[in-house]
Amino acid sequence: VFYFFIYRPQQKREEEHEEMVANLEQGDKIVTVGGLHGTVQRIDDDSVLAQVNSKGTNLRIDKDAIASKAGDDE
Image (cartoon, rainbow, N blue to C red):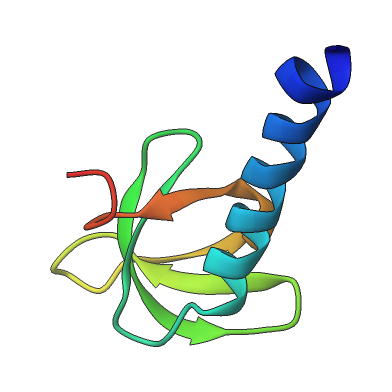
């Protein structure tokens, strides 16, 4: 019973998140778990460089900290 109500849904969400992060491309709009919105500029092994404003401010964000693509939940 616990498998179907707790473990399996969590496992499925984790798989979906890993797939979303693996399919990120330059130019995708993302939202972090902290609420920062940005546009992917460059993708590295375990992080992305995201532009967070129109003046060119870039932040390096761990892939684990990306909550979603901005268009996915709107």
